[in-house]
Length: 115
Image (spheres, helix red, strand yellow):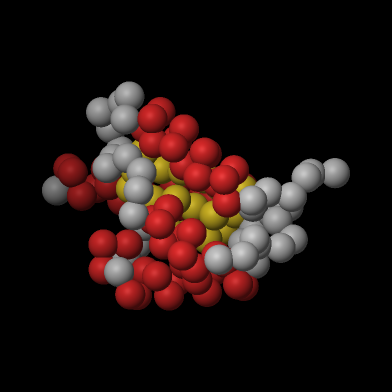
């Protein structure tokens, strides 16, 4: 059984991923698997907003795997409220679909760069 998480776990993971992302010169895409999350800790809106405002500048998109409707609604709302977040988050039902989304993004970028 996976133990419940709290926002300090998420903040630490966000800091660690930002440190790793800053060590490379290329764009970074993150897949975050939250399928085992049964309940989101309190103060979700403020913590998620804070997390979306931090991180490495080369992180282009985070794909969340297995989000519940609550998490999805918060992130979609934030993307509408904060223009800089538009397109920063995507959702997938499983890891395979998340990887397919990344492959699709990669092929679209390759086409854009060659045009």
